Structure formats: structure tokens, C-alpha cells
Length: 165
Image 1 (cartoon, rainbow, N blue to C red):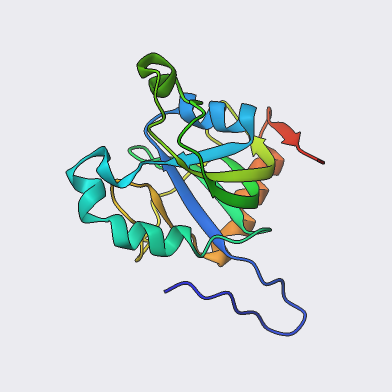
Image 2: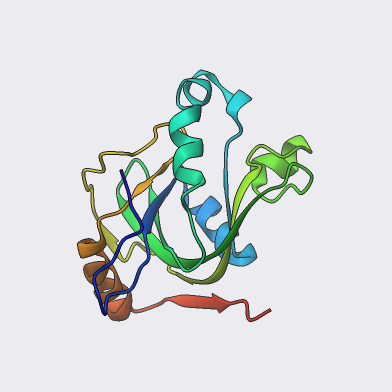
């Protein structure tokens, strides 16, 4: 269970892993500063894991950090800061949604900033106890964030986007 606790002088934020099937989805998330998750009725895996997903989704808070990873390869392509969570079943964003003319990922996380790289900045398969299969979300170990930041800093080509509104 991920708790929002901290020691005196330490930041009180959680770090999340957001997994994707491909780089195109992460790129679109970067372009729009938003991430989305399947709805409950998307498939059997989503129905089976709904409660675990919604428990985690409801714990995402402003200022939390999201790490963006390709699920099958472990390649990490970005890091973002959470602004808020919301539900939107009206605005298609991702390629599959645009092709089908309907929202497939209505559970959204709005980002205040994102650092993104087309090339993997590092590759990691980290054991995440509360990872929710079918939704691609889990708590990311805080002690691993420094190595991700270091890899981003040493990356030859990164892009960043900030929403100041």
C-alpha cells in the first residue's frame, strides 16, 4: 500500500509508474500533458482489476511524480508532475480513440510538466507490488527516482513541456 507520508524536511509526494504499449502513446501524453487509463468495461482484465485500479487512481495527488515506461521492454521515456486527476469520456486524445471516434481512456491525469525522450533514457524492470495489470499503473519506488533523473540529465536529447496555467 502506498501512503503519502514523509519525514521532517522530506517532500511528501508519491511516485507512480504509468506503463504504455508504445512510444506513440507516451509522445501524445507529452504533447497534451495528459495521461489516460482504460475504463472498467474495456475488457476482462480491466473488469477483473477495476477495484485495484480505482484505489490507486484515487490516491494520485497534485505534485506526485509519474514515470512513463513501455510495458514490454522496460524502457523509460519520461517523467512528469501531476496537476490533477479527472474523468472525461468526451475528448478523444490517443490514436486508437481518434480512429474509433470514441474515448477509450477516460480516467485522466493532467500533468503540469513532462520531460520526454524519443529514445529510452534507461531501461528497468522493477518489481512493483501493487502494479495493476491491464491498467499499467503502480507505485514506483522513490529511491529509484534519482537514477531516472540522472539518466534524463545525461540523455543527449530530451524535450520538456510545462503548463503554467
